[in-house]
Length: 374
Image (cartoon, rainbow, N blue to C red):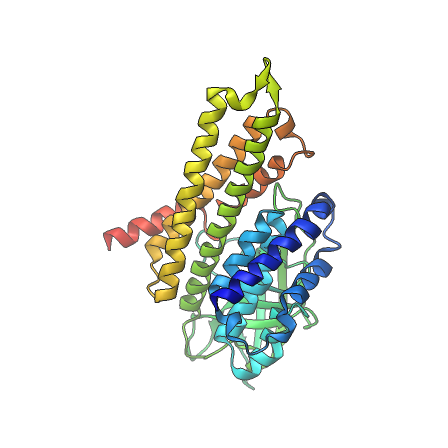
């Protein structure tokens, strides 16, 4: 399995260099070609032929792909991961056999694009104070109403895993995930948000107006806690974001080091100046710190010993260091680093999302504190 994951990483690395980098600026202006590129990568990886493959269950596959893609274009990695990891993996792991065949297989192969929707306008950091409701009807079907906000891939998603609060017995007030499709009556999405960063990834809202769906749209076991499964998905998302942070740090350090060797001021390369050397050394220290956190997280995942405190601490540390390193790269490049002609400007904008998405930095620290004091 490790060899297959490594090979997938090599394919993603080549694709990122040859296909994403040349189109990065165009994709930040318009995401019109995003879906075609995601499907092209899926084809190169052989995902359409992997139905039933155990490789699709391996969390290291998602983490490896996100890391490699982030080094070229973090926004692309974010959208790819939201469809393949958050939506596709939720359907694969939680779904019934019929649900896996109907929705997981096409999402994981990128025949259909997916999204995973928990956040609401009034339920961001307080993630489970959901107002979206699922009302159980007399015939066993459900009617969903509410709004989801800041959802990656919402403007383009064809399959949506949406969390709602049940109304009526049994399980009144409990949170459960449902599978919706773009063509369902009452489902609409807003336009892509005009964002500071991650511009190659469309983000938007989902509006649910009395969306009536059959009982088989309830994802997985009706008795399983939707809150617990959402938390497990969030922990996986945080691990993926830590891998993205490592990709941003490594790319920032490489670009800054190459520039420092070439850029000359006062008759010598700026790499000779101690102030520049200190920034580069600090970036290297951050890189190795985050690499160790990512490796430790993967080891814990393989052993089944998932730690909430560690996941939150790793996400906080890696996202903070990614933002700092990207800004250090901008500083080393000076005026050039502040222009779109040099990639560090985009990396700095994209890195900031890692401190917000998947739970803000403050929320990560509060979660760690609660675990320590439990």
